[in-house]
Length: 277
Image (cartoon, rainbow, N blue to C red; front, side, top):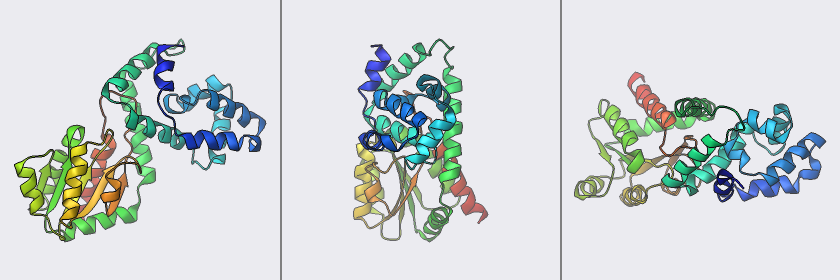
């Protein structure tokens, strides 16, 4: 077994997906059953192969894969792959992601591997496409109303989300006089949280591996009665239960650093809409 196989087979693919495929195998067409068998034997392929590469590996057409995903209730392969990726994103730490990327570059099925630049750009384009399709306009404008009604706004984002929090806070400060940014514990952070009230609005930003500091600061804000908008990537994110409104934004994998085009665009459009509206 190759190093890459050993690495990715140790990562949990959503078990309910595999159970559903196994349970419904007899309902699939003959070509779909061939693909189902391949997925059951190589579940990690859902997270790490493009639909083009997966079709070649499984020896079926891309159309078969799309119809297979539709039969399982997904809009397409991208949605199924993203679900698998999210599970892995939660489990893999920085070192694990670095090793995984390195091994993936080594194993390219005889084809020249994509450069890091190309891989990140392609992933970000996919993230932005998914964002455009998944955004709920009603939630978007509801968030704008909450921002307009708030007496003060606090943006909380720690570790890798610090840059997102700072960027969002900076753009918001051009529109609202009372905007604070918190990116860790400290005396100042506690003082800011103590000023929060039922009229305040807090943006919690957290992506895998969901910093504990962000969750704790979110709990403190909730205890003050502040309304909370969560910006995260998955329903399993620990900040979701704290929120009055949640925006799920794709970030994608694999990379040992995080690329956040989708959250940045989301923050920019929200502040832009507030300004023009």
